[in-house]
Amino acid sequence: MARFGLMILAKGMWGSEEIVSDKAYLQAMLTPSQELNESYGYLWWLNGMDSFMVPGIQSPFPGSFIPNGPSDMVCGMGRDGQYVCVVPSQNLVLVRMGENPEQSLIAFRFLDSIWETITTSTP
Image 1 (cartoon, one colour):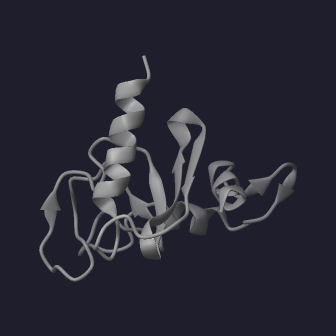
Image 2 (image 1 turned 90 degrees about the vertical axis):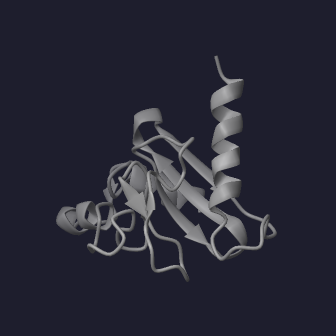
């Protein structure tokens, strides 16, 4: 998962090898893919948008889905709270694997608490 995040961080490159040659698609997957949920691209969650929706609820919530996270963060979020988060402004890839930390389909609150801990513990 970390290697996939590093490849996305490097805009489709792995070292000197181009893995994703369609740069228009790469850009499209990391931008809103539809009007219903502006915080969702092509299988990526996009932080820093004006609103977001969660699976199973058809009403948008105001603000970013991870308020304590960087606004340029994009996340591949999977079952049981597994994440690969890419933060270009910090040249950072964050990966979390393991058991489900909460009883929701996507563990937004848990990921937000990780970012709250990171941002309050760094000078």
